Structures are given as C-alpha cells and as structure tokens.
Image (cartoon, rainbow over all chains, first blue to last red; front, side, top):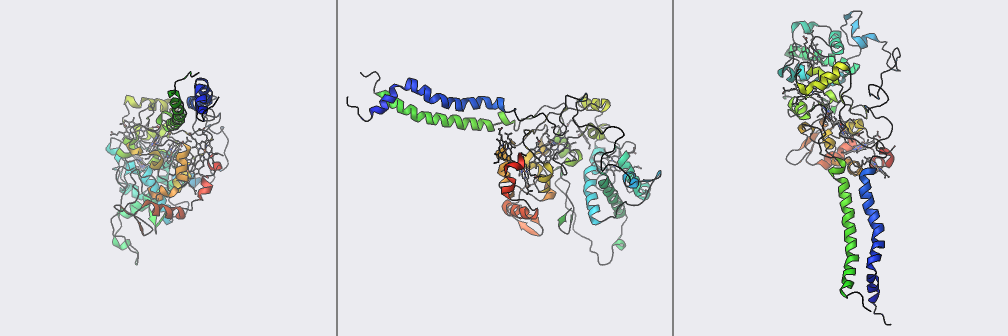
Length: 231
Length: 231
C-alpha cells in the first residue's frame, strides 16, 4: 500500500484518543501536581523546630522562647562593676561628671537619641511641649527651669534609668552609654538657651543658616553631620 | 478503510500545536499565581489583637521607628516592642479605651501580647536588618509606606527573586544613611536633586554608585552567592 508521506501524521492522529492521554498525562502531572501541591508543600522547611527571636514556645508555661537568666547568675559582660557608669550615683547622691570624655561624636549621638526617645514628650527644644503632652499626657517640666539647670548630670541619668513620677523609665530601650550621651546633650541644650555672643570662642564661626528639618510626620530623625561625615 | 474524516488531520495538528500553548499558559499561570498575593500575602493586612496603627503613631505623632523597634540598627532582628513600651504613653493616654484592654491586661498579668507575624521568611533563609540599615537601604524600600498603614501588611513578596533583584544591583535603591528612617524619601531627580558630600546628584544611579563605594559594599558575586542567605 502506498502511503503518502503525510499519512504518517494521520496515523498518529488516528491514535490521538490514546496517545494524547500518554503524551499529555506526564505533562499534566508535571504541571498540575506542583501547582496543587505548591500551596501544601510550602510549609515543610519553612517552619523548622527552632527558635527565631520572640517566637512562641509551647514548652514553657508563659509561651516565651526567650528566657531570663537564672536568678543569681551574671552573664559574661554584664557584671556592672563600674557603678557610677551604671547608676549615675556616688553613694546615694547623683554625681556631677561624665564617666567618659565628651566629644563632638558623643554630643551628636546624644542629640540623635534624644530626638528619638525624649522629644515625643520633652520636644526637641527640651521645653516639655512635645506631641504626646499635647494629646493629654502629663506636661513635663522644661529643662530650662532654674532647678533643672542646676541639677547634676547623674540626676538626668537616674531619671532615664528609673523613671520619675509620671515619666516611664527608659532603661530597657536605651543602652547605658547612649543614656550618658543624652545626658551630655541635655546639658548642651540647657547651656545653649542662655548663651550669648560672648560665649562663642574667637575665630569660631556660628552657622547662620536656619536648621533644616525633615518633613513633619515622615518618621525621620535626621542624623547630625560633622564635617560632612554622618555619625 | 478510512475511519476518521480527513479533517481530523487538521485537528490533530492543532492539538499538538495547541498543547504547547496550553502547557505554556499553564506554566505561566502557575508561576504568576506563585507570585500573587494568594501565596505571598503581599499587601494583605493581618488582624492583630490590638488594632495598632503605624499611620497614627508614625505620621500622626512623629514617633521614630527606633522608639519601638529598638534593635533594628544593631541586630538581625528589628524587635517588636514589649507591652511596657506601649504603656510608656498609654498609662495615661486612652487609659480607659476598651480597644487597649489587651495591652493593659498584658501589662497587669505579665502575659505577652501575641502579634500576628506579617513579614515572615521561611526558616531556611537568613536575614539581617542591621547590615541593610547601615548600608543605606531604607525601611520603606522593603516595607513600603509604613507611615500610611493603619494596619500592617507586607509590601513586598519576600520571595528570592525580590531579594536578588536588589542584591544584583544595590545602586538602584541605596540612599544616604541618615535618610533610612525617612518614610517620605524620594530618589533624586532633575526636579529634586540631592546633595551629598558637596556633590549634586540628579539621578539615582549616579548617587547609588557613589554610595556603593562610600559604604564599601561587597561585590555582587559575594552577596548573591547562595550561602549569603542560605547558611
């Protein structure tokens, strides 16, 4: 029988009913099964039996995977021997010196941290008219009151560490060194309020440009720059 | 004997040809479906025990991200604030609101508030916030306009292709470090040039390329190697 060349195709075609099933089935499996299983498979290695920070644990009654150190133990690096650095106090009274030298860098860091943690209530000027008191929180006193201008440095450190009256403590949010940087910055803020032209050392230029602030509500606390280097 | 009509020739060819298309469409569909919010949950707000609004606290009150997410600059984990942080203000503000009852209940009893995770990478992926923050990747590049989110949702798919898109060309996204926390940052354009170290930039690529050098970014080969993220 003479088979025209094209009959080959027809021959295949006659079998489509079955061939299609064979040809398509592996494909269908390759395609559809992953599609269907993708959703189901996703979690296999995604949730491994180990703890990322703050993950819930079913083992402990309080469900916390992060545990407190056993009572009476001190972790490496957490033995607070230099007590003035950690309390701001000499005996029972606040001391009036910084535990480390104040440099431009310390002040810049203090300014940035002050604007993050204190300014919501005390305002960037330190006058106590921040956003939160405007919404009903107790009004804090101005740092430029006579009493607080005379307060020793260690006192500010102590207020941050232990709180004061209606003011919450910031010990868990601000590391110790940063708290001291803020202390230095508050003192600088206080001094700046009473400063006159005579306080400017000869030869020092006072910038006359107005300061630039981030767009209100952007959530940004601009980082101060020193000689174009940001700290 | 001719069982099949001649037209089946055409049908058979069309079927073979069509199968290719059907397979291609199925493949394309499943890939797209894999990327869609049905799978990634991108832009789907999650219910929370307390309807905490970033829009209200960040844009409305001007609170910096670091007030609550204290460890974002120094550790892999950004940190979810403890109940105490909320009570800093809510001890006095809206202190009777039923909406905040879970917060007060948690503060009284010491039981943790259980927030629903929004951005959740699988456990076989290593991610680190501090390096991204310190190399000038803004929060909103990854998390979107947080200051306009009444309820938190994840902005990006968090899929591997998304991470790699940036790791292959970080200069497309980098910004000066002091702008990282600014949710309204705009990339430089000829209308809004940016100045850095006394140099003016009118487009993102030239700024980004300079920042890559300034911040000493590692090579693209290094940060796209599998062991950077799968370790």
